[in-house]
Length: 201
Image 1 (cartoon, rainbow, N blue to C red):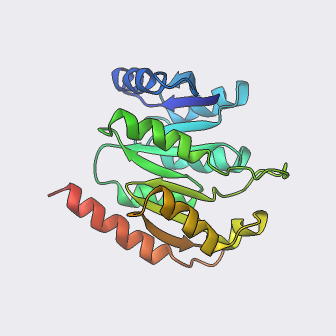
Image 2: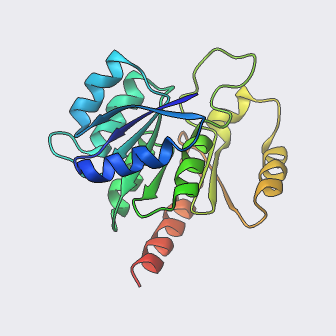
């Protein structure tokens, strides 16, 4: 069972997301909170597997909360929630270790899939060390592979990763990145800007 926390100051929206996620028998929403500071307190009490964070909240926004969560609990996956062009906020959150972002008008199937995808290969079999960065996530048909920081934990190389992912989604865009060297960040940022421009048309 994947334990999920939702942090959003819009109560009605948070309740709606909770209702959608709990249609999956693999997901349990363990807490609804209204800001990042409250999320930190609740995580300390009952650690979730995935935290959905609104990008803009009072007291502590999603970017600051992501940094705090990934510093204190690197094994917890963070997905950013947004309603409009927050590209700078999103990039900062991803730089701090967020697994990806979702637009709040995402359909139910994609929302559930995003939460499940955040957990894919989060800790390799045979390893008990939590990964500092998630290996891969596929949101909006893009997959980031953190090859330098994460690949050494796995028995398969980048080509094998590509082959596996393409079988699941032949149309996916794959961008190898490294949080250590900065490789691929420009390509990822350009892809994101293009998507934001398309959404705003």
